[in-house]
Amino acid sequence: MSIRSFVQRGRITSSQRKAIKKLWPYYGVELTSELDLNTLFGRSNNKHLEIGFGNGDALIAMAKSHPEYDYIGVDVYTPGVGKVLINIETSQLTNVKIMQADAVEILNNNLLSSCLDAVYIFFPDPWPKRCHHKRRLIQTNFINLLAKCIKSNGKLHLATDWEHYAQHMLSVLEASPKFINHTNGFSQRPLERPVTKFEKRGLRMGHGVWDLMYRRC
Ligand SMILES: C[S@@+](CC[C@H](N)C(=O)[O-])C[C@H]1O[C@@H](n2cnc3c(N)ncnc32)[C@H](O)[C@@H]1O
Image (cartoon, rainbow, N blue to C red; front, side):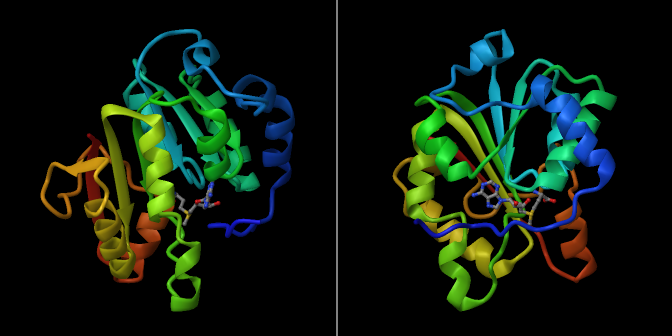
């Protein structure tokens, strides 16, 4: 079995459990085979993927700001899936779908080549201990998987509040011939990136925030 970048955590509330039962058939994606995202949403437009959406703060905010794009969120975190489904329904969003699975599996098995216009990974689990660094999501193999699924000139936006992980992300991406940095090193925080739970937590702990913006070559 490959090394996982996540652990299953968190207690689900009864409203989240009910939301999953009621709303999953409308907004959840069953992963049976390769997915045609235009067919999934019933329209041909830009498709954006957020990996590790957590409670869905950024996913919902981005989908609200850009009704002209479609958003797919992937996470393994069941309470977050419940919460995001409630917010999709409350906000009456028709441009968001949710996948509950390991992003590595989705990129490997379910997404077609060059099907994404943008990928966002905000505040991924930092795995700060040296012995856990191998569990970090951002590694060369993972970047190659992203490169397969992102269109030419498509966007990759990462953010973290852990300086050591930020430097690691930068060195992995700078070494990749598949992505180009259009801001020369770390980027200024783009105004359009919504604030998330883990960004707020990092700021409370006195951490800085590092954004990385790349384009698929
Ligand atoms: C630290 S939380 C950040 C959540 C959110 N982006 C935020 O900023 O508040 C990281 C999230 O990534 C998810 N995650 C980690 N590895 C993953 C993977 N391989 N596939 C899908 N989700 C993953 C975790 O379940 C968790 O919800």
